[in-house]
Image 1 (cartoon, rainbow, N blue to C red):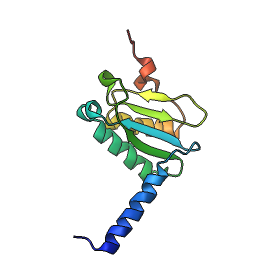
Image 2 (cartoon, helix red, strand yellow; image 1 turned 30 degrees about the vertical axis):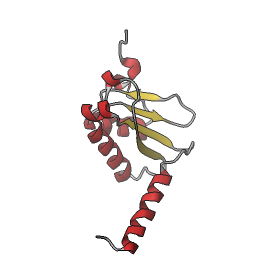
Image 3 (cartoon, rainbow, N blue to C red; image 1 turned 135 degrees about the horizontal axis):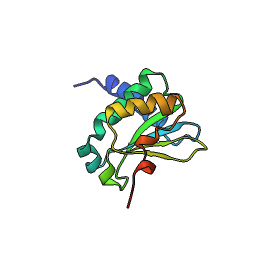
Length: 125
C-alpha cells in the first residue's frame, strides 16, 4: 500500500499528463482507435509505440498521443488519425508498430503524409 503522500504525488503527476492531452488547437493530435475491434487488431502496441516515440524524441510540447473509442471503420483497424492545426485530418489504416515509427519520422517530424498507409489510398467500394 502506498502512503497518502505517494498517492497524492501520483495523482498530481497523472492529472498534469491528462491536462496535457486536452484540446489544444496549437498541438498536433495523434488519436488511436482503442475500441474492442482496434485492440483485437493490434492497436495497443501501435499506441505504445507512438507514445514512446513522441516522448523519446522530445515532441510532447508539439504532439499529443491519445486514444479514443470506436472510429467506425472496423475492417481497417488499427486506425490512427493525425490532426494538425490548419490541415485536413489524415486517417492511417491497418497500422503496425513499424508503420507507426515511419509515421512519426516521415509525417510528424518530416511533414510528409505517408500516402500508402492512408484511408484515401484504399479502393473503397
